Image (cartoon, rainbow, N blue to C red; front, side, top):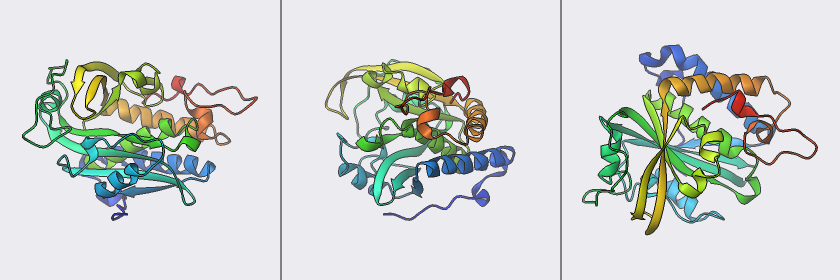
Length: 264
């Protein structure tokens, strides 16, 4: 496993001083929520280790080249590794991208391959998303841990890391249509906007795909952080599965509709 990145207030720029306490509070609340399921969290900046980890886990069909340093160039990236004892429960990754126009950059193919690479004929061509960006993905949850709320907590936690590390203006992500149809991207991932992106032969998977782009503005993310802190603290006797909009609820227990409280 690669070097562990230790994140504290010394890593934050003056431009995010006002949000520093908020983000630290979320980190503490999320860590406490993980501990309710006896889960621990490690943050790692070795993306080769992330690729190696995903290559050997059950129920995984491949490694997204967006997070593979052998296939794409990363200005910066980290991944989170959640475990219960020696068992790995889930992983997810985020990379930093700085570009004046995100979608033209995606069209260039650089999200999935180094130059020279073929252009991807995406359906979005506006330059409204740009600047300091985080692109998240690579979420994998162990079959025994699916339905426990990890797919709700980890996307939120990793976006908080991006806010802390890189002072991002936007967060982005992609989902295949079959996942988008389940409502998971909107409800559990907390997508602010879902936009149809692509329909056709997709080189990274080698088959025809339909993809949707996920977008999150900085203000939306920070509002969601505040809501999630309140949600976790006001439900001190609850676990992740009780708070996530889509999760397997415990028997004889009414679900908590977290979507009405926490947005992103």
